[in-house]
Image (cartoon, rainbow, N blue to C red; front, side, top):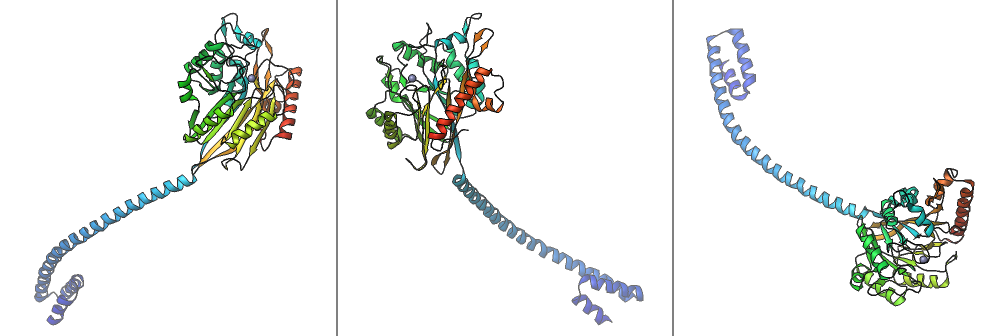
Length: 438
Ligand SMILES: [Zn+2]
């Protein structure tokens, strides 16, 4: 019996042994068994103390080991995290697409009828806001809206044809309704001499309206000839030229950009050295009232495209001319031309001259390549209703009016707008290359 208990004490674990002793003790209740019980307690406590000592040391070692492993694991996690970020960034760069939207309009004229219409006899002030109110949504939805200002802001007397000078409220309304840039080189730039050229630029600058085409002097020309517009990581450069200044001399020291292949080539080559994604030329050219571009226009367009211009926007004929997109030309990312956008606003009321077109263009940039991704035209027609006994000029978006069954127009106006839409679509459907209506 004794041998068995001692064997158990040595060989078995404490719990099994204790259970056996207690049950044995309860069964037999002998003094010897009590003795064995105390002995067991003594040994077990000693064993426990011993185990505790061993456990602490081992535990410390294990904790240190875990700490170490933990540190290297955290390090690895950080490494993976940064690698992951680098990977994500490079994937983002590969797949990221930036975009920039543009809208171009034709000629903003300032005929006598328009000046008279903008004048309020009661307040003695001019107000052109209603002119642009109905196209505001279209033009303020893009990143840059760009139009040709075909008047000077030379101060009074305010006059229309042939020597234009309009009140500054005309360009205030342009700005308020979403036009960001006005090009200033056209056949009326020098209508009011040096004062007209400079005062126009002073007013545009005071209103923070960007411009190019005419300059106060050669220093300004050097720095501002290429107008750079930037948004969403895309930079475009804009140049502007005119075929003529209607026989008016360009007053010294001002500069008005004229169509001349030598100087245009110089400008293009200089622009191309700049960090720009697309080069655009807004050009004032072509025979008036002709719906088809002349050979001279085509020759100049070819010259510009051949030398690296990506987009050409034309105006001056007072009527529309075709638009073309050439997919794999130039820089392999396409070339686009609108030969004439017609009248954006004027007092010309005869067939085809009473409206114009806006061309909307979307540029996208991916992996340093900038593409002409989307484009299309919007037709606009100028309404001239009589409100409170007074003529009012309003540029109307044709498609919207067409959708609403020409609601709000008189029968005469409805027919005139319908005819303009019909003529314009007929021309564009026949002659446009890939440029369709928006
Ligand atoms: Zn013109």
